[in-house]
Image (cartoon, rainbow, N blue to C red):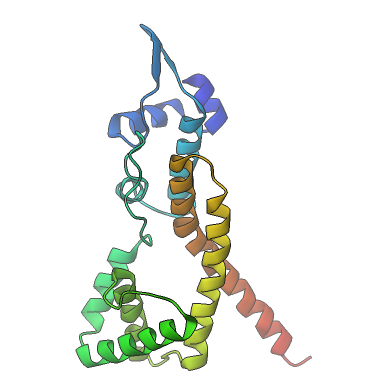
Length: 206
């Protein structure tokens, strides 16, 4: 375990906690007081720490995202934090007519891009909540901004899908998908802030 701790840069007490809680799969017993851990344990620990330290997820959220560490695969990955802001948006926005209108706009935008998306998909509900909340706040995205959101999301998703497809083992492929979705969201937020700063500097008068 000391070698696993050194390679993963995760403390031994933390590794033991992850083992007890089921976040990390058990190693191979090689003696009464000896256990062998392999590369899958190192990878799993790095994924867990990345989701917690960079993604800001709770242990419960990490468990939900990464699923069963013993090889039966993760649950379908979801955007981290979606439940919390969805409940907030629902508390602010209760106009079903507005939701229906934004849903129709989204379906039309999806069709224009050739995306086959279920209109009652949970992620569509999440996006509708965000768009309606933006409208309530006085800054609803116009057609150009909405198209830009979809275009940017599509470009990133295609690039991530290509990278994920290069993974060999099924477990590693699933972990890559989780990391791309959970941490990619944080990366996009940072890039968007940087882009706003760069555009503002370019547009400011000399």
